[in-house]
Length: 336
Image (tube, rainbow, N blue to C red):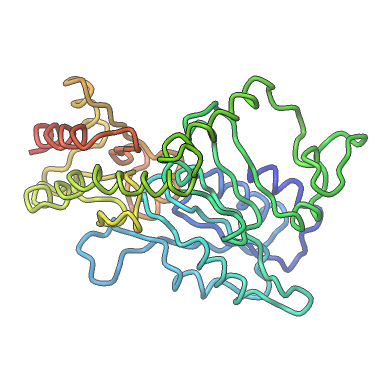
C-alpha cells in the first residue's frame, strides 16, 4: 500500500521535500519511502526507537516523541510510522504524534503541515482504528490480521487523495473519491466480498452485537489478563538471570502494549531464537515463531542478528488465560 501511495505522489514531490521513517516498522511502511527519497535525491531521516534512560535492558525500546521532534521542520513532506510495532508490541499515541507533526511542520501556504502514513497491520487486531479522530492522511491494514481474507485496505484523506496522480488506465474515472486512482488492477471479487464478514464478527464480540467500541474495550480488558502471566515470567529474576530480555516495553499495561510479545536469550548462555522455537515444535501443543518479521531495520539498530530474530508470541482475544499459563509452563521447561 505505501508503494502505491509513493508512486502516485512522486510526480508532485519537490526537491526540498524531506521524509521521516520509523525504524520500528515493518518494511512495507519504510522501504517504499526510502526508495522514493533515493530516486528523487531527497533527505531522509530515521525515527529510531530507544530505551528509556537508565534502563538495564537495551532492547526495551520505544518510539518516543521527543526523539522525533528534532527531525521535523518546514520541509518535512511526510512521516511514516506504525500504530503498533509487530516486534515491540508498543502502542504509539498516534493522535498525539500527528498533532506534534502538524505543529512542527506548518509553513506559509501549508497550515496543515506534513502528511502521515500509518501502518495499522499489527494494531488492527487489538484496538479500533479511528482515522478521523487521529486526523490521519494515509492508513492501511491487512484483513487477514482481523480474521478475514489475505487482502489489504487503504484509507486516504479526501484532500490527500485529490492531489495524488492516477495509477490507473487513462480512461477510468479519477475524480474526487474515485478508488480507481490508486487501483492499477481489480481486486478479486471473492476476497472483497469475504472482507464484509469481518465487521460482523467484530460486532458480535460486543454485548449488544452491534457496538464496535464496546467490542474493542472488551478485547483490551481480556488482552491485559492473558499477557500478564507471560510478561511477569519474562521479567522474573529467574528469567533475567537466564538472559531473557523482552524486546519492547517491559509492561503489562494494555494502554502501553499489545499481547504481541518478543524476546531474546542473551549472555553467557545465549540461545538462538530458532533453537527456542525448534524445542517448542518438538514438544508440540504450543505454537510460537521466530524471525525478523520484516522489521529488518529494527534488528540492525538493536545490534541483533536479523536471521536469528526474536522469539515472538502473538496472543489475541480468543486465547485464554489458561493457554497463557500453559505457555509460561512450557517456557520454563525450555529455558530454565
